Length: 180
Image (cartoon, rainbow, N blue to C red; front, side, top):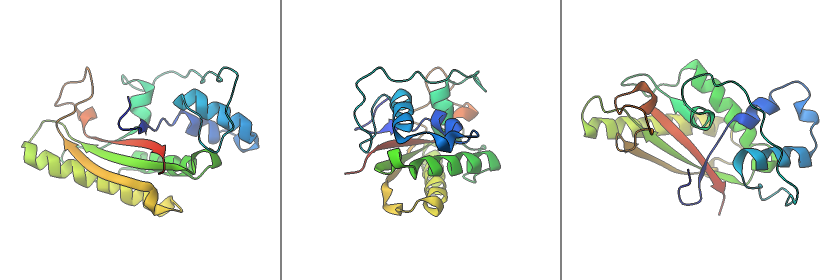
């Protein structure tokens, strides 16, 4: 999925960086993993002429595809408060964003909701969710201005093949692109 040059952040690399010995990877190895995960090299990475390293296959933790599960923060019904799982995921996102290959990445945070309640209430709730994610990321990011856009789509863009009233639609999408 691609919006105006933004790409969803996939945390598959976060798992790599949190394993023992991962910090011993060379910049080229990290860049290669970044290219494999995102399909494009980070600007601070040299262009790779060989095939990208395939991402490690891990069993899915839920029914959602890994890229959706990993690039979204999920919320309880009617809420915009981050639970412990979301806080851990956001800390991992921030660590990846502070790593050399991702230091030039800027973010778009888009809040979403399910269809329970009025469209107007869901629009406002989805914005509060995106703002909660932005505030959590700002705590860890050296350059807070990298968060370029915090917005709400409310209930207008449910996940594909998921019922519009599903809990999985109560989410914030984290997308990245090279900063202008």
